[in-house]
Amino acid sequence: MPRESAAARKTRAEEIVRRLAAIYPDARCWLDYRTPFQLFVATVLSAQCTDERVNAVTRELFRKYRGPADYVQAPAGELERDIRPTGFFNNKAKSLRRAGAVLMKEFGGRLPEAEEDLLRLPGVGRKTANVIRGNAFGAEAGMVVDTHVGRLARRLGLTRETDPVKVESDLNRLVPPKERAVLAHRLIQHGRLVCTARRAFCERCVLADACPKVGVPLARRAEPAKRRKKTSARA
Image: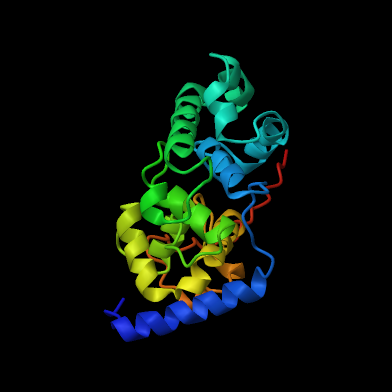
């Protein structure tokens, strides 16, 4: 593939954004929440867990634990049992308790919007901060880079990086701030339905002609079945 100029890559990225918007107009965050703090909790629980399972757990969890203080004051072992189905429940419970304590002490029990404040909370990295800021607060946050977004960004030739922070940096240069939150959801949906980890279904992809298919093996042509010669057994 010939080397692409920065201007050409940006133009191609704009076309990718436009096409994904057309095919996934209703893409959104699949974690259920009503408040920024609920999205924070759901995002912490989503590590190494499906959105569907997290939503099944938070349906009852949010009725029982209404704010940071409830997580801090939860009896030992009880919070762990309540979030057990999401996996890694001991570490997640520890992060929720510690984050709740910081929120109560430094932010009056409210989840802050500023990136630097969110990053001070246990269990919050750049991905979680971007999820919260872009979805719960509607802020012009950086791109959320999960496994789907990272894989598609490389296949689409929008980055060569594998480190999520570096991938985010490359995408932030190509995608306008107001488009980043929803684009992440569209890439995730496309990565689940079309450009999957096991196989890229390029033959039905709306981005096929705008994609260099980096790292995607060429599909093997199906070989016609060989006709078996009929042999007649003669006595």
